[in-house]
Length: 283
Image (cartoon, rainbow, N blue to C red; front, side):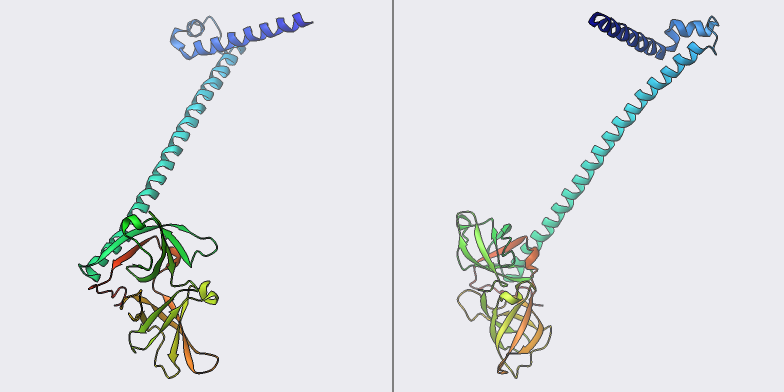
């Protein structure tokens, strides 16, 4: 029984080998004996054998052609993917360059005496991603606690902790943030603070404003300079809502920061504020 199976397998392989050899030889039409016989008329062109051989040859040629198409398709897809990747990379580099140029443009705005460090945001907390973030510059770069952090749009926050090559920046949306502020048009002084209730709305509030205040919507609010951390003149935001407090004694002003805190990528850490005109973001 086993001998018969083995013999059958051998015969089958021999037959397949013969067919493949014949088809391969047929691909070279002019040098093939069968082809020459066909051309000389020894074998009828319409015979069943010839038709079978031609069908097999066309089938094999089709397989070879299909493999070439598949290979070419794969190559083109790889090239397209590479082009798309290169395009994304180029656009990302252009975007980063534009952001860095905007920050470097602050050098002229805040004066030649400016001493600053440009840093990149490298980490955000998932739970408090609007409250603080980590930058890639630290003590070895001269970045220290309580240094002011800005960009070309205005105030972002300040450094609350620093390591060798990193620093933690608290933003003006954080509930623990506070800064003395002034309304540019009316010159009224108050305190801008973050709030738990306003964090998700990307807003902060200005408190201790008289109920008789003449503040209007879209008024610009800047740092007043009356504090230990923030110098005068940094743009904070614009007024988007005005309401009286529950005792009707003062007004609470809701402020929309000029900086897009959610999408900040690069920042400028001000290491020296003496003799610098920090009118950042104020037109």
